Image (cartoon, rainbow, N blue to C red; front, side):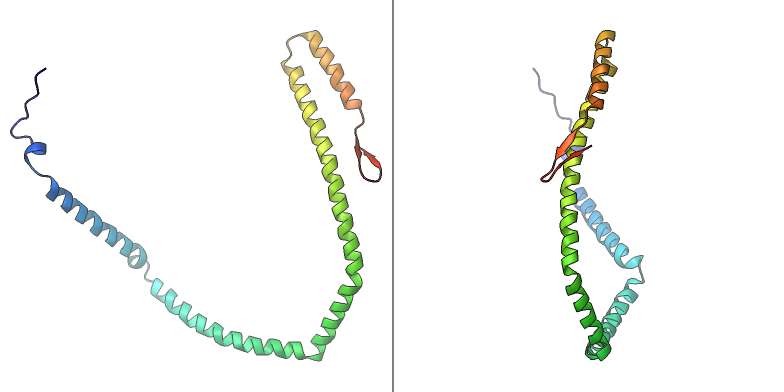
Length: 169
């Protein structure tokens, strides 16, 4: 097999393309820096005003915070506030047993709902699977047999056992 001769004027073999690559790289990097500058400063002249406003507002907040701390202490030391705080604390202590009772009942009802949902989900999945089986059945007698089984299953009453008594769904 004969080798293909390389022509004398082939630019890929006879010349170096490094200066072209360097020039393209410099142009691309310059374009990148220009685009970043333009994105951050060139097209957004209000950024300077945002930074200035932020600095001024932070200084305002530091003075307002100290003023608000003193006014908060004044309010907390007033007799009206103390009376309201004592009434709130008393009503919280008074209602604590009822709140505990309600939370316990909610927790118990949540557990019961979860148990009922589990049974419901299982029964619904079984009915859906049986319905699909009926819809895809090719034999008429088998389809009728499955429809009777489905109707009978739907007539059954499911029960869920709780710690105290069974519940019917």
